[in-house]
Length: 106
Image (cartoon, rainbow, N blue to C red):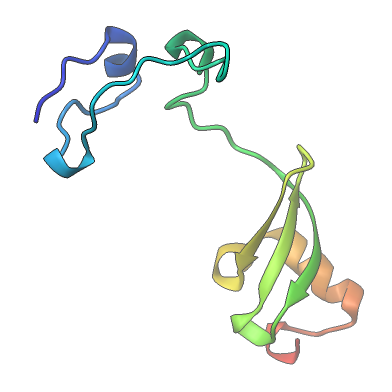
């Protein structure tokens, strides 16, 4: 299906074609129960924002199968697999702080 999207969504690169199984009937927002769901209030939709990593706080697992708790400069924390953090400066600092010479020794 091709949807008639508002110009603001088209400018943000949202494609108007959707598969039928993804479409649902429109239910208008109840602003009393769910405030802040107007398109104008979603200011960062489609805008990529780069966050810097402050540090790696913890890990679970061993070697390249390990998961790492990454803390961003915004304070947000996520668990990421090694292949997503392997090129970060923070992983080198984390391993050095643990006294581990490399990921294989973790």
